[in-house]
Amino acid sequence: MLEIGTKAPEFTLPDQNGEMRSLADYRGQKVVLYFYPRDNTPGCTKQACNFGELYPQFREKGAVVLGVSKDSVASHKKFEEKYGLPFTLLSDTEKEVIQAYDVWKEKKNYGKVSMGVVRTTYLIDEEGIIIKAFDKVKAADNPGDMLGELG
Figure: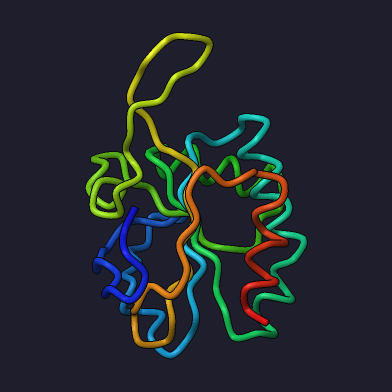
């Protein structure tokens, strides 16, 4: 996990509509950058839907929500449409950003060890500095917890 107080790594990734989005596009706003394993899995769906429900409150507090996984643009588009998600989903099929943010880790699931995305959320300030970092977050609770972090 990246250190609080460090500059968030810059990136440019395609969103669910195939448009390129950069972290720099969001200067002047707080960014809730959350990394999740896969579209349409129970935990990830709950997390995304909860972020979606709370999104107007994030906007009121001057924050945007960006979800990142290694799923394709097409997968993100289906996920967005199926659940009416109002925020940006970024496709990192090459895992460049996932690795830059140190969320690609060894995971154990029922005794089986594999590499994967560890559910992690960063709060980045208006200047691009990481001000909060949470790993191994609980999918359902994470959106409410992050809203609370915004004060």
